[in-house]
Image (cartoon, rainbow, N blue to C red; front, side, top):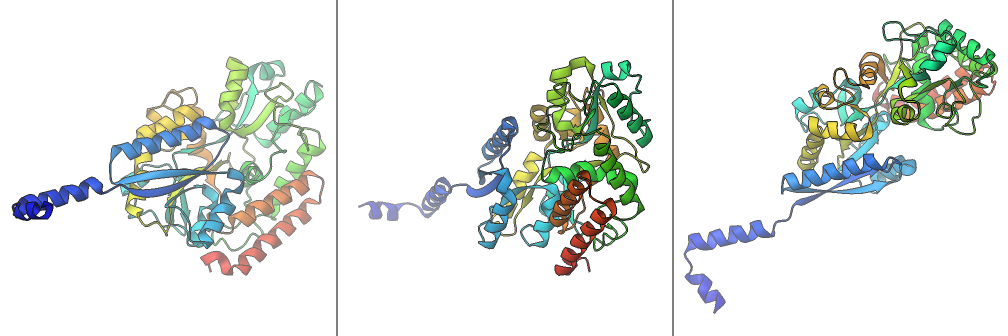
Length: 423
């Protein structure tokens, strides 16, 4: 009876019913996303809220997020790639992006994400390999030298500015004066107890300000003469002296020396601004990093988003990336986490980073001083080798020998991997 009834319906009506039935039953295509877990619960929540907003903004795609522990994130991505089980969207620490691109995990974003969205970003918010963009980020961070106005006034130490940062000599004079006071057993905190990427992110900018680098960026094939040349040796000797003279604790028991008043200066990233300002209030002073001869340098590049080659819905993945690059989305991330927004338009929408904002100097530091870590697939070995080298120097090893050994390790890895595509 039902079939007879349908057969009597006009064709146009039947067609309409068929289309409506299909439309009603079609569910949004699922797009899997992986994000690293972090102890910053607010940052995680902002990302989850952005995903919800994207999913509600349209009905063609549905992003489904999975949180992966940060400590095992890179290993998890690598294992999933080998098993052909990568999600559509990955977040990645910017310096590992070239390695992921070289390994074939990622799609270039040009032609996938709009040119307008890519062009709106500050340089440090893009991860590249061989001139192509593979990742984009909502935020960055910047290194700075934190202190207190009361300390500077008490010991007659000049407050550094962007127009006149401290020189190496001025930094050493300040440290000598603070050490001699007896008030600070280790006047400078440099987070030497941290492990992993901090060593490369935190201390390579000093090396670069001395005129050296981790690798020759003209070809990404050699470190000889760049890491272990005269500039590298000068940096290594300076770095070692900080510990030998008792200015910095070789093996700190915690990272609370500045916030607890046990150190007078704190060399760390802008992510500590909230804690430091809450602790010291109007007494807190934030200064640019010192100029060791070739201008102040801070690290550039933080966690960013990319689209995998195995993604079955790259168009939908790209639409999500474009969505979170909107100024309002970037500004929301910045307002909640305190991170530096990755577009000028977003900065204008924030209280901290707009022109005249109370944290604007971090945005200016990043714009003026940021240098990205080497855009080569060799970076993971460069970073781990640099950490081993810097720790050895810190602990009293012969500086030149430590530098030479690091160069040998880096160049051997590059040769073993046939230049990572740069030959």
